[in-house]
Figure 1 (cartoon, rainbow, N blue to C red):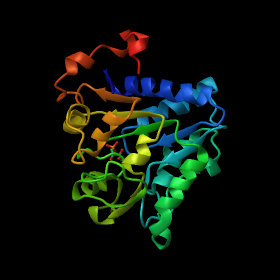
Figure 2 (figure 1 turned 180 degrees about the horizontal axis):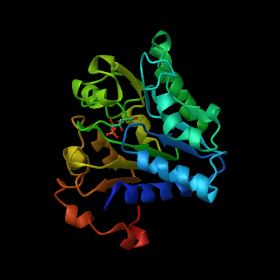
Figure 3 (figure 1 turned 135 degrees about the vertical axis):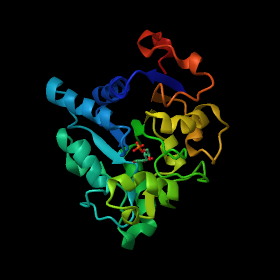
Figure 4 (figure 1 turned 90 degrees about the vertical axis):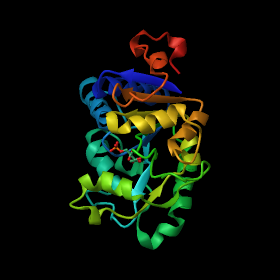
Length: 260
Ligand code: F6R
């Protein structure tokens, strides 16, 4: 894993945005994997700025979200389909019809995972996957105990994740109990991964992911198996890394051969 320790969320966003811009520039039909939650917001802000001020176009891009709550209609303000539209895609020139999410309708949820995997395959896979990490080490909604080879499926959210996400809803009771999520095996299929995390609350999960054993107890640790992951963290999120001194080289000064 490449670990990039930045001074601020904005600095990390610039770094991750350059990865996204490389892919968007170099491919005819790039596929972006988008995460919701707070961590990628500075990155989306930077991409929106680049579109507005520098004419970076997303007209040829497809996007896929990582996960979706089961039971929220797609236009519900907290459905991830709608959140990603509000936070990012509606501000750039990406075609709405090219933004895909798992189908969270409970009536169709049983085979929604399989159908979503088909969409990902038809698109040719994800070129760059943006991720956040939960305080319990989850990525997407792969909670501790998830199979390291899992594919898109329904998961029951832990109490910890529901209470972490209650801030987006009126109350804890309104947070859905189930979600459809790309599996860990699905995420590993992405050609590149950029994981964003800031703040002390993420420090333990980051240490377990980067330096702990690969284990279902910290689902994000499966990323140690991926050949092309960049972990973008601030000092607080990096504070429990035992080898932080080793990673600490400022990324601006890193020789390019170390970049990945
Ligand atoms: C969201 C997602 C989640 C979040 C994670 C961190 O699509 O898949 O795994 O990335 O819960 O959330 P934040 O960034 O809000 O701390």
